[in-house]
Length: 222
Image: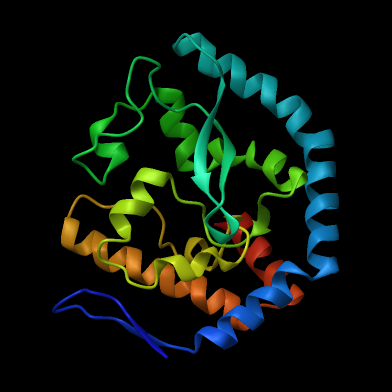
């Protein structure tokens, strides 16, 4: 089966069979080493790093704006199941989480000064180690989409749901290739999103424990 996006002049092809992809995904999801590593890494990170880093970031957030330091957002996870994803709050509390007519959260909602710093260094994602410990995320995998964003992306990326065959991750192939976040040019954004999906499919088809370790190593230096 050939999977193809709906991009007109910028069509990007990525060929694979559904059966092979499902088999590879099953190997990832059932691999004991991956789950044990996820559990131990997240447990020790939360115990020895997040435990003292959280109050520092929380105080910085609350000194600038009122409200909770962390917030919970519904994201799309394994096999399309919705889960509660934890993040540090980077937006002002009186703002909506998404403009229905826009793809670009960062262009429609004011980000706090602390939030800009957290986003620049991806520190807003650190609470997701809680999700890893709980088992609804992995350290490495496709980034989990917000529901509203996923629905918009699905309108022009045909194979977007194939990335849902494995658990979402804190980091992944797209992140180490600098394919992260949306851009203001909508046509370019469509191309970027398809490229990110292709990276997610590449990850599933070529996964190994060694590959996970390489991605984590490269993420640290990114």
